[in-house]
Image (cartoon, rainbow over all chains, first blue to last red):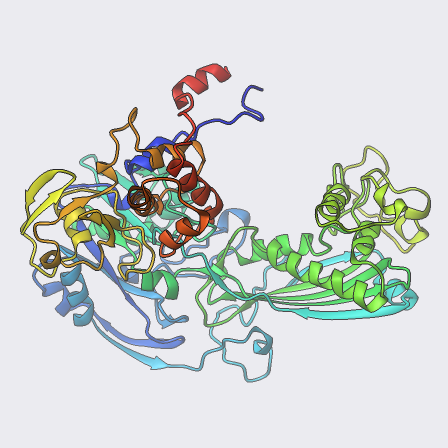
Length: 464
Length: 168
């Protein structure tokens, strides 16, 4: 326990302040080729013709890859979790977002690679595109995804559901129903180091992959799956990442780079430009969250109905996972016994979205905290006291029926109140995270409570 | 074009409109200036040109002929002899992912050299205004520069190897 509470030097601290940390772009391998991608200029189009023959003839061009060069072109990021695949590594037949890679070139230098992109012959048939998640289910909305407008594989449902307690009872009993709509928008991670990969074919036939990924073993699996190679044919080198924030979880550059390196039998480096990073790399998703709360005049939240639309962009990637986290956190730091949550992963012709600093949770936390303040305003009671009253306590259960063992809402809220000089009534100042009793355990919160020693309620939480 | 980098003179072969950043990295393998945006917007390629912090991605070689270039490799002599600002960044945890750190250190070093003494928070914020850190570590960075200017950089702590042993 010598490390806990101690000020330890960073293992990479001296290297960082002396400029000796080796990021992917700093690795020098003789004979490395430069890579560029042919990307869709359209948000949605059919690829009517694709001919790389002229480009291949240019001096200095060493390899060009299209979907035909990918052993397994369509592979899902979450196949290992049973989530089926929908996204091609290189576009095949159609393009569904602006910037989607269609072909990639490795050449002796960047200028030659760019000339080769110009020499690729391609024709598109532009199609109508969809950008507003609220319109995805409208009749006549543009269609482009083989699964339809939403991700359809949440068990038997086409959306993530949470059902807890008796939502009808809560809305019947309510003194007021307070509604709100919250729409956190897309955010580009914008790491200082753009996406970059360097792939070196080794004499023994293996590939050494220098990667900026945040998820080494995950990326190893993705590359191996697309290339249909056993894991032991790939050596990933990483760990020094110039900022990621979730934007380097998707395996964005390694696989295409590896394809080109194999084809050219030369090392290939692919470093995205800042423009590519902004326009093409994944972003935090935009969300649309509608909350209706059934509340009592004295500030108890009896029930919550939630409708969430999660903008997945053109493919699923990790969005079903992000939405599931969102669903499990949709009561925030508070205990609400009766819930009805419906969340949809909606496809649009935007760049596919991904994790960013609290995947799926920050969006719902924003909505929940804004909504808590709105409840306090409508009811005319202190937003601090509203939060403390409904705060998670030991033995309370989350939306997905996990019993709280060590909830921090009460001490954190009290500490925040003290820091900003908020004066609270004595009964609130005396609150602890302990199990609810007495006035803090009204009848409607009894059934959701887990007995002592129980970690998950499998079928509890009826009306109360 | 002849280029003096960290006290060593190099004859370079790139055309005169090649950026200084490209020549440093690709021709001379001086790798501390990073490729962040190549648009002069992020600051991570900053080097000293005759003592002034400049964006090497925007400087053509023709504009720096005969100039003395200093990069992060030219400050201090690691691992024992770090410049004060380097020591302050290390002991004050002012580098997170490290990718903006080269440019931050160069600009901060120039600020301290020019002031010759303690600098204010406002001085630091102005000097680092064009430097982006997406890990959002600005508070520790500004604190480290102020500490360095006052000669208050904490002594380097145990090296990681020693620490690991101590933890067993």
